[in-house]
Length: 502
Image (cartoon, rainbow, N blue to C red; front, side):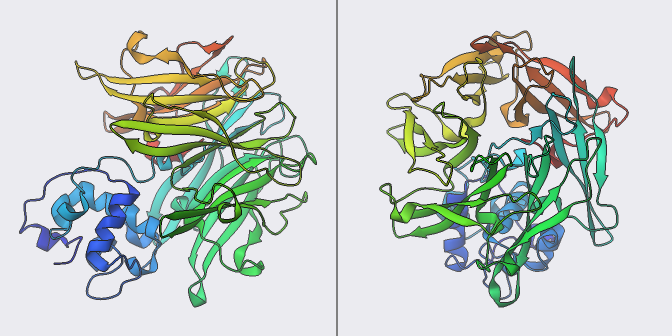
């Protein structure tokens, strides 16, 4: 029997509820359902064998008319919705073979944060006042066949981040929020941060993947309308898979303009994962054609898991060149989760082979429970890394979260230390899954803070979201302070799940 049954067929079964599964488990399910053929066409469609009515019901047409036309990632996203809505019996013959009931990890842990395991900054000084601001790409949904998206800014001020202001709205021009990966940098070198969006155009004729790059250029008081600065269809690469891309930004060639780097997934051959690192160099008015600057297939590491990589950017070795840091998942053995921290060191023309800077060793550290951001928290010139870490629930049912700091010394990283624990805070409870961390100097005093967009769920019929900051405190971070609450703001309702922030 095929998977993802329609509403009529669902009434005949009593589904067991589940809510999430890792990419690996979804791949096992697809192997059982369709022999792993994500482009399967028949009575049921795609790798997960969606009933056409189910595909429509759960929002699949936001990606493609039929499941077999969507990417693997897009099919898994809809599969997550079907799993939450219909339960395991949407795949009655295969859920137990794939272990769908036993895997509760989200397939794309940081997707809710808008960065697909990429912790690049989506905050920057957009108005040139010396204080960092936070950008949020907001999903208004789809109506009349048109996807509507807005861009909001929380501006930095002397006292912290202010109430959000909408600076752009796609209006009647369709813009798919789900197809957007947001990143920030001063792409034209004018001293004000701009916004870049890697945008999924789906599959072009001939089966090639098509991706575009748009920029929203800051004008000091808002942003100019988005401009297409690159299209894979017009580039020698011809095909570019958006779903296989994790973008970050930095001035990688040291010319005063921010460039784009993309960690790219080439998939798996046998036991070897192949990953590449590409750079799009800014030329002031757009971007040059992407250049491959590293390939795991020709490196000593040989195999590199794109799926197991969470990216961040900073100067990790004190040479004034931005490097790319990767929090890397080394899996789990004998009940112990293994995680490492690697860096691709920038050399001005590309990146050196990745070097391991820290490993959890015998101490268990869960990669999937980690949300990293980076900045110079102790003001010593070296970029440090803060990780918001999920501790699950306490015995009395409270959510527990810790904030760890990895302090850089120019050669590597000291062992992480606990900078904050919700259990010791007056708040007592903090939900990691409801947190989207960002980082920046929001007050302009020269010290970065960790900001968190926080989901309160629905209150009195309205979606409620808050904005908190953890201020710097020397070699640590102070306890959280709430700066904004949607229920007290003119917006009243703010949907956390529709917000992409770094």
